[in-house]
Length: 116
Length: 113
Image (cartoon, rainbow over all chains, first blue to last red; front, side):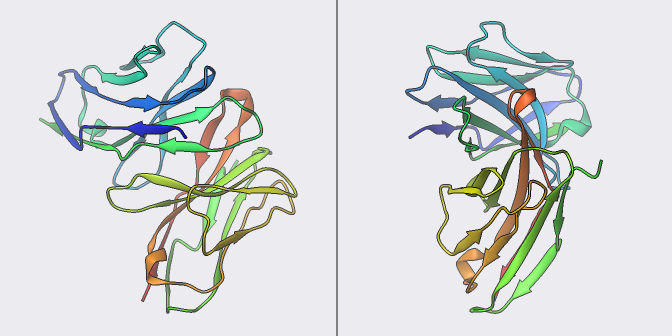
């Protein structure tokens, strides 16, 4: 069975600085998707960034980028130029590429605090 | 588009009562799922559906039933509520064409006393 581990329950960063959130996963599959979701106090789940395992290039979305290390099964999220609105819970998630499933496996989350 | 909608937003039940959490999506997504979120445990999959008439169990299915008679609707039924089912429940639908991106509803906070 696949597992996702986020070993940092809490992180903090100064506004305008850069922070990296860690995520590791375990799977025997070769084709899968990885996601980072943000959950602000409103509790709405918002997709931040997505990575397809077959793509070697790391995904980027504006100030958000990932460091995807397939062999090490590591998928970290880097937030550049942090803003107060980035404060939230961040969840790493894994999904098999097999089309007949909709199982998204989440880590336990990292709470990010942003200080002015 | 309204996206994924869930009703109610809040609910209090007594132990043993039954209820149905409603979920609907207007994006014509084939896949839909139900999760529960408990403190310190992230989101855990309860049941999912890959199309009308097709459902399957997730990680924590006990105590919950689902059915999928239409593409749009995916209700979650609690047959006999227990305090252990106190949680926040999220419904989601998945866009296969966008790398299986999941769109989440706003959540339902359920308390069982």
